[in-house]
Structures are given as structure tokens and as C-alpha cells.
Image 1 (cartoon, rainbow, N blue to C red):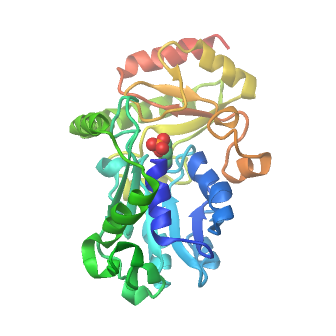
Image 2: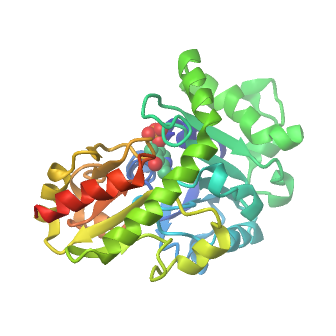
Image 3: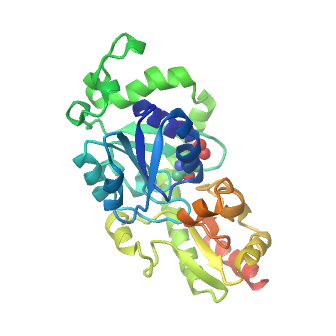
Length: 340
Ligand SMILES: *Cc1c(COP(=O)(O)O)cnc(C)c1O
């Protein structure tokens, strides 16, 4: 997934170019944009994605990409992608959407204005935490000539027999990635991993259907529990994103979300230790239920200020609800909470 995102960015951006990104993105991508790309001359403006106008404020002549995730990691915040894409397209800027947490079963970003979609196939596609991979897909509709912002697409490329990538039409973006970025940087999937990911895709719809059913039940259970301080899941009626969830996610809003305990960070650690069925793991979207405290693990590379800007507090627990029987999951949470 990280390689897919990196390749997608390097495919359109170089020294002097800029990205406008939602601040609420996966920790690894945040670090790529905040730390790894700036020394290469690619700088990112992070914006609060809850208002599409915030993206527009940061778009300038150097902007090459508007970047967001359909369901934010870890807080499951939703973004009005249609509105963000409209803002980007008004300025001729390409929209790249990370659809990892939604999967194409729950949300199809091209139908909401995305030009390029990236996935970490490591998550729901494989589905069993056995395989790492990434995917880049394009809508084929972006007009590089009309935009005028992408000379590497509209001028002949001396690194590949002077081909003008934009002239390839619907396959321009992904052909350029394969022929240049992947050729030069080397990310590639082994045949066995490709086999495992394809096998995972065969049960994607069944798994995601069960994931979202279980997640909704777990979120409702936690939100009513006396030891739980808060739950952030757009499937709950009191979520600020509930209206967007109802509009854009009629089949459910994924199975990864966050909550906090009244006992704070320490109680959270104990809860994770008390659980028997949930595994303490940094992965998400596995068929098995997983749980973790991001401030000390997945987001440990961020400083306090950055943590606050991406919405992570020390007490925050991230849960990735699996496909087990819902009664077993609720019984496990019940016994673990009772011991606190
Ligand atoms: C895990 C993840 C990635 C990175 O994918 P890897 O396959 O682990 O490299 C990117 N985006 C999101 C939303 C993720 O959850």
C-alpha cells in the first residue's frame, strides 16, 4: 500500500510541486508526506477535511495532487469526496483517494469524482493478514491537456522513447507508473502474493458484509457501556458524520473505529490485555478482530502537536472488528470490561 501511494505521487509530482492532503490520514502516509517527500522538494499542506473549502485555500500553481481517504484512519471520519473533488477539478488538480478502509464493496470513489484510487491490498483485499500489496487504479477520465498542470504527461518523456503519456488516454496514469516509476524504483508483487490477494478478493463481499454488521453491533454495545467514555463510529446516530454515512455508505461504514474508556490510557491498556478473542496487532481489516492503542504504536512517529492534529489522544483505542460470531465478540468485550 505504501508503495502504491508513493508511486502514485511520484508519477505526477517532483521537486517544487505540492500536495494538499486531509490531515486525518493513515500514519505512514502522513509521515511520507510530512517527512520523506519534503527533502525531495515535494511539500504537503495538511488541512482539516471536514470543510471542502479548506482544500481550496491551499491550492496554488504548484499543486499537483489533492489527497484524502474515504474513511479516515483511525477515527473513521468521513469526507464529502464529491465536494472535495469538485474543488480540485475547478483548478484542474488530480484527485487521489485512498479507499483502503471502505473497499469498493462499500464505496466506489470514481462515482464521487476521484481520478486515481489507491488501496493497501494488505487489508481487506487479502483479508487474512498474510500478504502485503498495493493497488493503483485510474478512472481514465482526467484531462491533462485541459488542466495544463502536468507537463510530464503532456510533453514527450525522454526516459521512455519520447512517448507523450497523456496521449494514451484512459490508461495514461497507470501506464506511466508501470513504465517509469515501477521500472525505476522496483516495487513489485511476487506471484504467490498475487495469488493470495486474488483468493482474498473472492470472499471480499461476504467478509465486508459481516465486518460491517459486527462493527455496528460492537459500536452500539460500547456506546451504551458505563465504563466507555466515547465512541467514534459514523454508523452511530450521534456521530457528526452520520448524515454523510447515510448518504454515501448505505451498506455500512467499515469496521475500523475508535473509542476511549473513562479510566483513560491505563484502563485501555488493561482492556487490551484482558481480551481473549481480540489480538493486539497493528494491522487492520483482518478476518480476526484486532485492537491497539495508536498513540504508543501505529502513530508513535508523530509528535504531540501532530497527534492532536490527526485527532489522536492518549486514551484512544482503535478496534478492527473481524468476522467472528458477534455473540463471541460481545462476550469477550463484556468479560474484559467487567475486570476493569
Ligand atoms: C495500511 C494502510 C496503508 C499502507 O499499506 P501497506 O500495505 O501496509 O503498505 C495505506 N493506507 C491505509 C488507509 C492503510 O490502512
